[in-house]
Image (cartoon, rainbow, N blue to C red; front, side, top):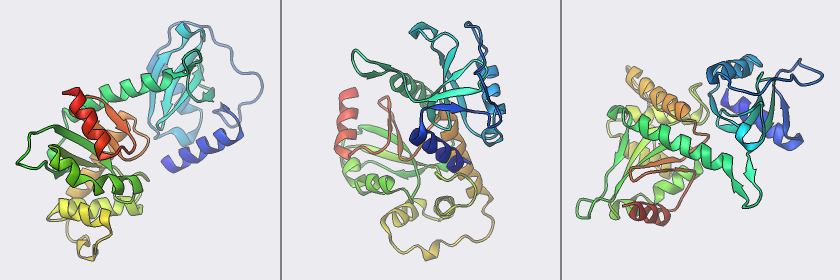
Length: 273
């Protein structure tokens, strides 16, 4: 499903910014009175516009009346920011900018919302879904990063290449399984199952990310616990609203949506302490 949404969004960005959410909805856009709106109701209106949105992550962000756009609302659909009408039948794909400073107001707001949600989620995470790479014992502890990861993701592999550098600086990595293609049985999902089911999941994560031999990680016996762990990681990422991997949550505060070098991560965490 996420692949379908990504394809739709890509086509929209290539062909124009205005998105008519309902395929058979034609003519003049619905005019709605400005004012308060029930966020849950708006999300449901958007969801009902197209059957492809049935299982998509849709989150209400904010009313844009204070920015001079009465009757328009910012939402996140499968991690993509967009502005929708009150009836949820039309959307503009993109972000709101303050042109005087070229500031991405939508991006700033969305990142703060995601960071707040991420911290809440991490507070109740199940330890059994984590794959841990602890900081070195002989250095002062700098903090922890929780990383939504997919072993087939090139930038996840690049980040893992710097694990020893992070450990030497006092940073612990806690990997959270997040198959980018969803839970439909793709290569990323299959590898995460093998990693989670392995006797030594950290070694398995390392082997899959570094291209080592992985034939001995074949799935055997009851894999229900592994399936549940991967599903839990994916569901958590969906609730937070992440749109790709790696997605990093820092114990010192804030999130990183995408790849950052070890040097940058260490500097950010030191500055926050």
